[in-house]
Image 1 (cartoon, rainbow, N blue to C red):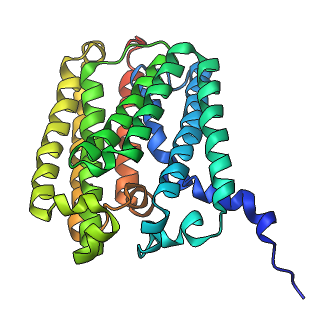
Image 2 (cartoon, rainbow, N blue to C red):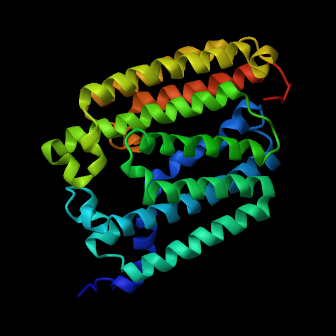
Length: 303
């Protein structure tokens, strides 16, 4: 007779699930500076950024643990979140609290070991997330802007760890793209939960589909403008004058995501759209490949 693994033997996997590895792709924003400074094929710098990526995975994982500890009762009433390890009872609260402390302190300490400037950025990210967990996730608009700022800090961290400056237009592009995804997520939550939305996430009472649709459209336009200006007017663009060729890929990618949100019901989990939609995967791959090919025409490494 086959024996069922005990919960204690499965605890590492349960804990990993609680860190939400499906959300780890968000931390790929740290590679932005590496790509746009034409250093993707530089082994040393790629290694530093990969370490930064892993540390952000641990840091963000600790915040997910804290968030689930604070929202455990609400999650148990949610049709999907009730299956999370803490809400379902798979992961004991005591273990989750201990893991939060270890990951929070450990990731922060390791970040300063990688470089004090990088450590300061990670510290800022963690403090921002604490404010979000305890207060700002209950404040309309500020909740989405806080999440979006976290993506900007990831982008900044990627530049700091390899000591390259980042164009303000690239940072604005990161911010607007994150806002675009954030408002799309809020929209899908309202669609999924319907009239029960505010019972599961109180802040949703302050949002509506028409308002979110308007914000998504505004931010989508600004995102495209920011990237277009970056591809023409930034220092990188002046050294790589054909970078504007990559703009259509950004426009198509955002249009495809809007299609998935409005026509296919994605948006509640951007990572799910990326995992499941082949067209989105292809356009992102083509976008990055095009940039690398264009950079290959010029060896200048400046961002």
